[in-house]
Image (cartoon, rainbow over all chains, first blue to last red; front, side):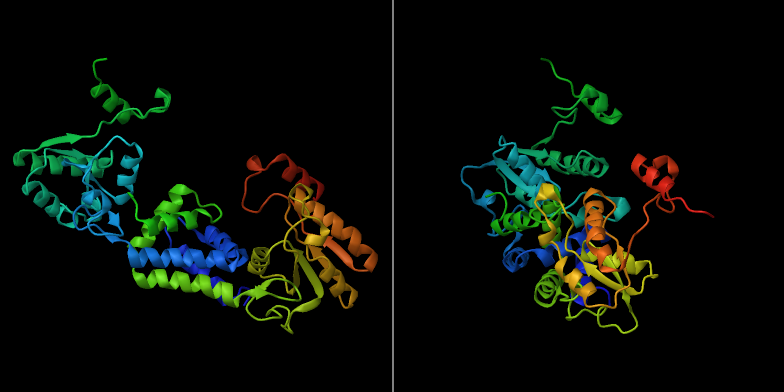
Length: 198
Length: 198
């Protein structure tokens, strides 16, 4: 009775979002209460539009509002190259670096026996179909540099090499702009192992 | 072009919320994308209901869906007591402790010359009117234990004491369950200053 029911309900709904605890949900709910009505409407509209208009590309499985997605239908992109990533945000991270001009394939996850995610749960069949259709020369495995991503990359490499395509893995090493002092053992090991002639 | 426009727009809208940065906004937007349509609708409905149905009590200025609010209209509450707080969530914090049975007055902020918030920006006039109407015996100043809250409490004390009411300030000291080792200097000073006979 000390908190209006709609406010309690909004706090509950916000708490269901990932990374939002009770305090954050309360802060956000009070923000919504104070914010102009038009701003709250813009947020609702944005949520609704994402649910209504955003879907997944039937070719590369990236998020898109047109199927096939703009990357898959862009003639200026090099279709001989497929970069395999785990999730849609990873595509954005690669696009931000501005030096990749091939296509993508989003697996929608990584192999994880602990979480019960096996090869059939990932978009691997459609990747094999794209390569089987011909024209692909290189597959760049850009799954995350962690246990699951590494396992997924190794699994895919074994599947893809016999298909006659070049299979590469993005370099792992010390991140640019960091300090060696803060590099963990495994990263340092990868950096030494992957050293190149200058 | 690498991210569907509705998704970009949702990320932008989410970033406008307090405490939500670019990465959190992206994570939340992708969560909305993956979540069932019904859940997204529940969230939108909750936002809309808060904007439509929640208002401020004309007596104590707390948030409410009925005016006057349930606390102000509750006959079992002791109207001789008014607890003054800065914001509506503070009322909840006090209600959670379950040992206060008086009424409240929400100032909607605290004095802050740096942010240009003066006495006229707070709900002080209506507090004076409530006390002027008679029947109030004690005003508990429960503004936050920081510079602005303290300044507001001192300001209010000076205004209220001549009106013939008892004016008290909540105790400041080391929080229960904490360790003295982690208490800051000012808190420790307040704890020593406020020591009581056992």
